[in-house]
Length: 449
Image (cartoon, rainbow, N blue to C red; front, side, top):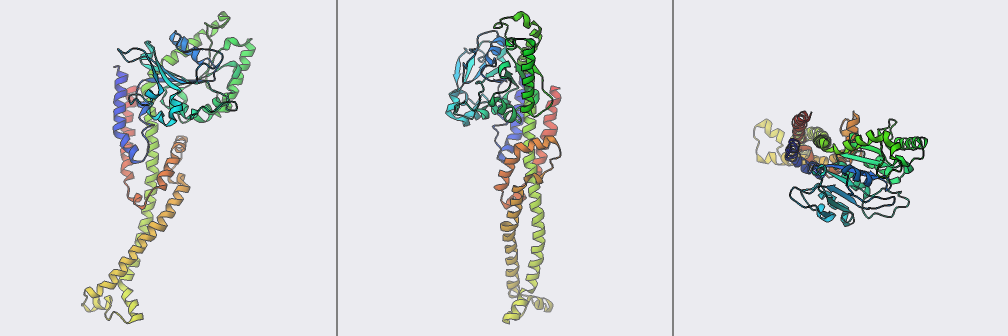
């Protein structure tokens, strides 16, 4: 086991020991925390069916791993990796992968049997694949002409992107980012599931362009489409590549040899990003959890402040009733003969003099308690559910992005909150998670720097 792998195991244990109980306490699933800590480095390859995904994979490992062709050759998510030491290469069906606790795919059970039937692992004896796995994906299609896949395709893409240390998006010159599912993936699925530093854009098959001018037009079209999909003016780097084994004029493509080698090196270098990706993932999940706790702590504080105001009014009213209730009753009924105040002044106070005042005081406190729990707390909760963003400061872009991820869960927690929520120890939990973020996590960042 390498030093990086030992560190990965150590980080995994520390994170699960300290964060998993807090995730459970706040009804947050560890499915998003735990899987990314397991197993080996992964690279996810995405693109439409003609973008050259399988060709690139075959060239990286210099063997015919995946079938290639101009038409769709595979409609499955295929995990390509080496077998465990001492084991023979084999193919493993998706039903086994999603039930193997050693692998990070158990949460994919939620996508059902239809997905499992389109998910598999192929093992090959390859030195590079001992420390990493390549995930080949079904070609993306236009939603207008696509038949139902039978499972949540974008959901699968999002979960795999969250696990992957590198996501490679491939395009070909003839469909430079015009496929509907490509747009949906870049615009809505990848943000929040994969950091920009883990995305690589590739335009392959550039040797099929008729002339340099044709290549420039295709490249420009891809840049324009990416700007529309990402919503950004600054365009990320796009690797340009081709297959020398398939090109009709590889000599004319010699200028791109260095770029092809750099792309291959970047993909094979994914294992070096593994520990840093794990730390980034834990960091993000911990801050999302912290934001949930922070919102609930703020809600609890508002509840306690409201309870104190109501409690002060209740005590003043109860004291008044305790001292003067029997006086008021005597004015209308003539009883009791001796009031509490007169008995106190004469020094002859007995149990009989305390009965009516005590019942009145307890009754007032009970009514105020019901008023608080049934009316005041309910109104406070309704306001918090309607405007949960008012519970915390969203003063930075990072916190606003976190908020988009956790807002639905905060609303869920507020809706189910009872009046006892105001006494929950959220502030002590905040201190625990702050110690983890500012202490343990920073120590691991320093070890990898």
